[in-house]
Image: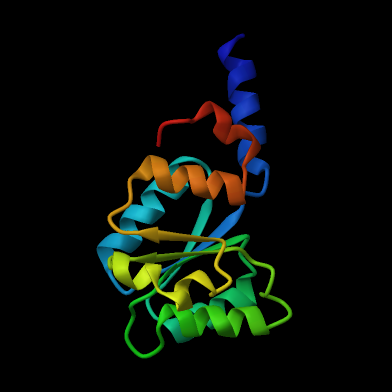
Amino acid sequence: MSSEICDHVGATENRVKAPKVLVVDDDPLTQRVLQHYLERVGYQVIGAIHGREAIKLARHELPQLIILDVMMPEIDGWTVLRQLKKTEATKEIPVILLSGNADLMAKEESLQSGAAQLLVKPISPDQLMTVIRRLVPIPWTRRLQKA
């Protein structure tokens, strides 16, 4: 295949609307790392650093997926998740809950939260991308297996 054809295929793929992922975490480093991995494989990323901002962005942007930290100041991830599930516009958006506390994630509240997936930090990029691709696939990411 000529480079001209490859360039055209790449440009066409870039015009396909990338699924939008809302990353909610009060830790800027976690935000940057998740954004890096997601953008490398073709997702569009928007970020929020606290619960109120997450709820507002979810309602306005209507992402295809939300990655939500449990432990945040002001409003914790469970409260954000409950609000999202009560709202007609956001109730069907899959949510991945993240926490650095394995015991916390094993509690009944986590298991009954309505989250699509519960993950304990630190999480490997491969594990995270496997879960994300299952919840919100992108056709061309099959060729980009390693982020």
